[in-house]
Image (cartoon, rainbow, N blue to C red; front, side, top):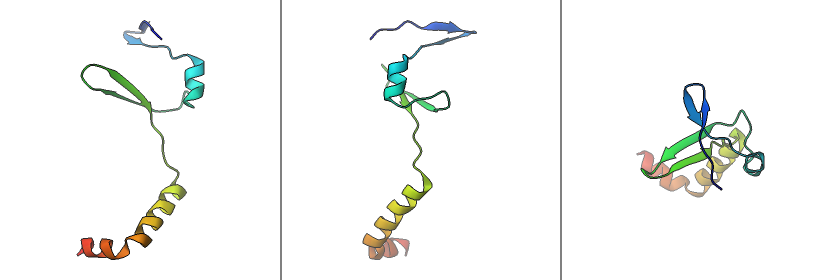
Length: 74
């Protein structure tokens, strides 16, 4: 797919088609991370892990690697 930049005020922007937004579950409120590799522009939606998922993951790691973590803490 090819697109041209559109003038938005004194800036330039790109319109992302609704099917792509739906596919990636991007809404008006979704934060977008913008990066470049020096040649390309990379747009990526920022996804936050719910706190409960993060805590469960921590508990799994902590229980499996308790002794190693205690040694590292010394």
